[in-house]
Length: 335
Ligand SMILES: *[C@@H]1O[C@H](CO)[C@@H](O)[C@H](O)[C@H]1NC(C)=O
Ligand SMILES: *[C@@H]1O[C@H](CO)[C@@H](O)[C@H](O)[C@H]1NC(C)=O
Ligand SMILES: *[C@@H]1O[C@H](CO)[C@@H](O)[C@H](O)[C@H]1NC(C)=O
Ligand SMILES: *[C@@H]1O[C@H](CO)[C@@H](O)[C@H](O)[C@H]1NC(C)=O
Image (cartoon, rainbow, N blue to C red; front, side, top):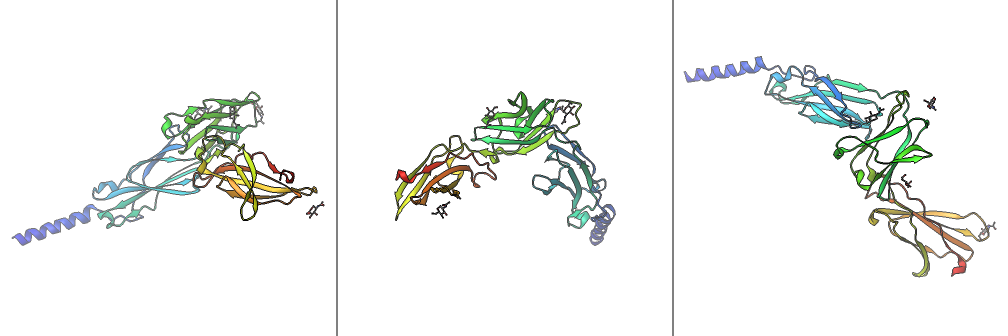
């Protein structure tokens, strides 16, 4: 009696398994549906939403997840996100084409415990507006790590431009705190040190309030620590030091501002004018020190050098060279 009970239970179990669950494969698994992208007004942080495929949720033992891909124009490649959720935020450049795809992923008894990705997918493609941007050469410089000036050029001086910006902790999108004017026309925006985060992404948009013009807003996405421009160095000096033989020691000081000294690298342009008037010969040396030793120039040479600085690779991915210092001369007569 007991034996029969066991075998009939087992039979029932197998019948349930085979009748209730279809075994899905990559072709039979449905794509997600109702893919939709909404722009909450954060200048490029979009909300992507979709619904699970119809059939798969019928089997509670199977785990449905999603495979979201979009072309990431910041990295210039496809980004992939695997998520159990039916929504995801993506940061995009609103001036570029947007392409988002979502596939279904399934794993569990209904796929014989191997992960299956649906061949079909839901897709949304959005093209940016076809007009030209209202302004050109939109760019920002974090001067001395003290304040940021974002500037632009514009073809048409008759319209009124506005700059808006947003970053993760800023709450709502805000308008430029202080416009920069050039000949009475808005040509930029100035941010004080605390108004922008130093190392997180800032989204910037410049649009035109003139409704008749068919021009597109200009967008810029940046981390301002990659746009630091140190001040020009003001103090340079030259002296003769005794190494094995006398040498010329070039020295300079850190520029004013908040850029940490260990973050700077220097380019030294050095050379000499021959006193008979031929073309000066210049060389360039990059160093992280604030001094450099050179052979003593000959009596007929007038030695000169100048320096400029930018953030070294250990502190930022990119930097902007400072302006050059003045030239410092070493005349044979000084010796
Ligand atoms: C500048 O704006 C004026 C007024 O809308 C328009 O007539 C003119 O064609 C524009 N010029 C350019 C170069 O876009
Ligand atoms: C940045 O903008 C301010 C405000 O217009 C201006 O005074 C300052 O000179 C600008 N800085 C640079 C380096 O252009
Ligand atoms: C300019 O952009 C801001 C921020 O996205 C938006 O609130 C505003 O309506 C736009 N202005 C025009 C004229 O499109
Ligand atoms: C200047 O002096 C250098 C080295 O003494 C020599 O090679 C060059 O030809 C001279 N140039 C002129 C224009 O005299």
